[in-house]
Length: 400
Ligand SMILES: Cc1ncc(COP(=O)(O)O)c(C=O)c1O
Image (cartoon, rainbow, N blue to C red; front, side):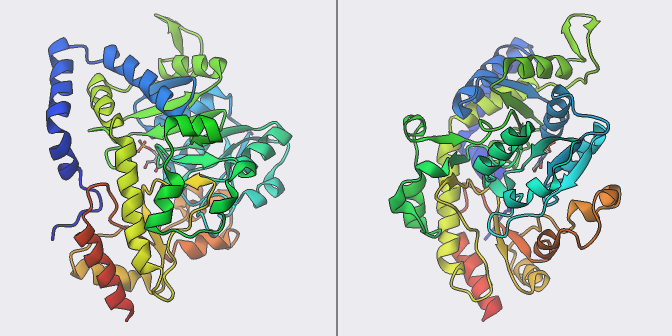
């Protein structure tokens, strides 16, 4: 068996002719910067996510920087965020001169614990920056209502959650309450067409905050063949600022109104992403199916904690992440069986040398505990049932 964490070769084999045609189209047009595919992809992406505006950029890290700059966040400002994420989230807050203020994570979702946000708000707080970690939406109802109450911006880091959905709790269908993750009922509870979304209140992540940031890094649920990113918003004035900042602070050629950066999605990547966007729902469904297969077996192993899901959110399993005892031993055992796994993230951000000043050790106990327990298993739409069986049997064997 040749199991990969992410298998982009298998995926490419399925869409090769369409992708090759899209690449050839860009090359023959010689329109490598901007142009038809970039503009069309921005429109298609906004349409898919249910937002008014989408501005592409070079990667998800730039998307965060540009979003923070567009909201005027900088020196002496504080941004409330999670310490349990990829470094870019914190890095960009610090890079624009603001201070990341960490709130510990929720035990079930691994996302920022909304119940603990209020106690961290000060007169300097300008924004809340939740991350939809592993593809699982953060508690957007609570976060947006706290932000509204305190007049704060909400910036969604949706890098890992393209296509994930969230439903306001007041309108959860009562019949679904209390169910646990299981392939059969999970799927039926979370299949929503675009029509269903507008009818019953389900919305895609990216459509909750003032602004949202996306990464198209190759391994993401919607990934390109290089780097790419997107900033979305429903606010025209934020969109105009984002466009200007991403283009050297310029609306009109050679007139630079503000400090900006050079951050562009190139046309080849946009053309590839247009092909892949057509498959995203199918691929996310496969991820959910695969998560269901994993959970069916792993939930029965004492000590192993499988990912939780809530009735008010659709987790799209960018990662399938367990909490386990003897984590490092398990990882070595799996390695001997040619099963890859990853630790996202072994060192919380407040313990990283670059960001130690922002929170003391021991101040974020759940994050610190979880960083020693988490392990992510292979997860991608092309994962085969017998590969999942081999992985789950190996984990059973380790704990038997
Ligand atoms: C949560 C999160 N935010 C931001 C980023 C940055 O995205 P990029 O690698 O496209 O710069 C990533 C990428 O892994 C991420 O996982």
